[in-house]
Length: 328
Image 1 (cartoon, rainbow, N blue to C red):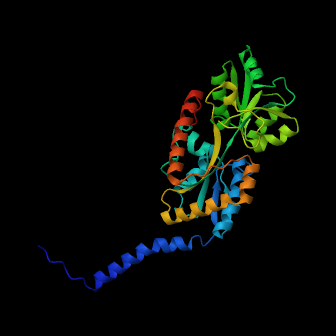
Image 2 (cartoon, rainbow, N blue to C red; image 1 turned 180 degrees about the vertical axis):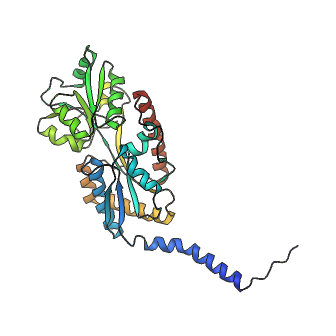
Image 3 (spheres, rainbow, N blue to C red; image 1 turned 90 degrees about the vertical axis):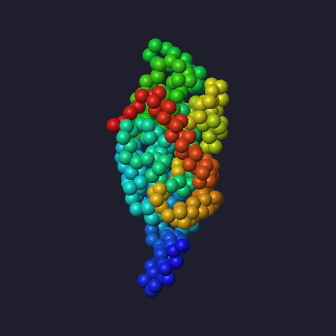
């Protein structure tokens, strides 16, 4: 049997240092944040993701007692900003507003993605989701989903617009084509506003887009909604029936927004961010502003968020493959 060596002064100092290091993380978390936090938005200013990020940032800043600086880093379908956060310092001072595009669709859409949507991020909060609305020109001949199906069955078919190849609007159109049959040609645009303008003027027959963007044009009579893309009707347009209920199918696609930190962010900091974000989202002012954008809340715990993200990656992967969309 070996007799334990008696500790000397050097051993005592090393032990003290180890203990201090062990205490440093919780202490740092307790003082977090002590400066402004940057919220990276992987899309341009004025987009739905940008608007939602600013609403969440305002509420989160109040809870944390620090400014939340929104940093738009658009490019390559949201991959530029997402990769920046994935590779950035994991200290809680740089967050990402991820979307169904950046963290579900892109996993299959890009042959070589510069980040892993699951492994490279720690989910903070599911901010909410929004069914998109299938819209056509307000004064056009297509008045119902049945009208759209009938036109698609004709020789010339119909065209549907989107904000680009592989976007949720594109893939929703592909799923509708599979459900209704007939000929439907996808026409990708550089951004959603241009696509929506061409739908309003009947240059394209229809598109799927966020309620916040189309509702003002619906109210003005320039657009008509034929259906909502989720399993339940949109809270922003409850008079619009779902596509699922009109086709007796499982049609259920929603856009969603999730706040992320880099995966290696210390657990106490992640916990602080989760608590503060949950408190911000529960406030009537924040919830009201999100609802005005058509965002419906569905709070999830950490394990549920992880399971949700993995399920979404698999679901959208099937649609990407079905559409044939691919980005190098």
